Length: 423
Image 1: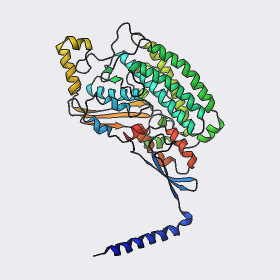
Image 2: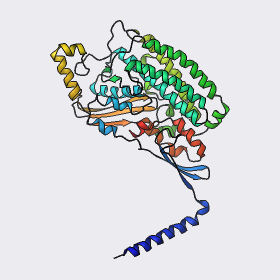
Image 3: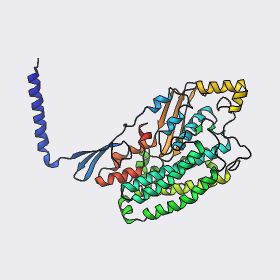
């Protein structure tokens, strides 16, 4: 039997042998550098293990999971309605869009996703497009600041504050809105909300032109972005990229066009596409997407059923007492309505057995919800397809051969949020 002294001698010998091996390769040794998880240019708790040969990267391994909260497991112990606030915490830059994506998945399971009231569909689309602009503005501002353009960051955050004001007017909350409900909305928008949206669009058009003037033809900005982090069409498809990162490589795939939902089929807008697939193309795609979102919002303000004030009292919820909560007046005056409310709140919406998947064109890409139901008010299994998680998988392919200073640029061009990546 080996004694403690024998083990100590063996350990010492092993360390000595390793030291000799390291010394033999001392002139060709590569340095390993931890970037993150607490780093200002990683946009959250992302850790990247970088292997360096001088200033040149030879390997990059993204290490995710620092913000993991077990959202998918939590969903199994909550009713479908109770899980809505958790979707706010996924891509917390676009909570309004997350709510809609999840609600549409449950409504598809219920078989009512194509039976939503027209006014509800238009309001949901407006919420999604406002969320797209807000998310892209933060991504653009942080991206520009990481490359030294601080003025753009201040400009984009000024406009995002106005979107928060619109979210507050509609839902009562600025960040975690929980505005959407299964089968409709928490409530109708205020009578002056569409006018506020129009006013925002006028002011935002000026700010977007200013940001475009500051960056798009700026020599330093173009030189930092062009021909860096090139993702070919084939590579983008192989890695499962979606959203602006996929379209920046020239792949014409937008769920709003290819698999239209809500009222997108009735709206006129273009899909922004890149050609090279580099950081500059991904920047241009997001700039153009914000312009197209403005077009969509303007059309929605003009075409919304019932008009801005909804004088004709167009509904915003499906007329099904087994899915949506009854009005407070009916609950206080009718025993049947009181029972319906009690059942919906305590046991949840009774979904049929089966499974479904719904993919939503979120600002970061395709946000998908897979739901497996055994019947009853809670899902048996829920899986979230987080676009940021999938998009980050390509980092190991993009970064080798780049310089350390290129890392923040590539990360900024991918525009991810760790809240939805880690879930």
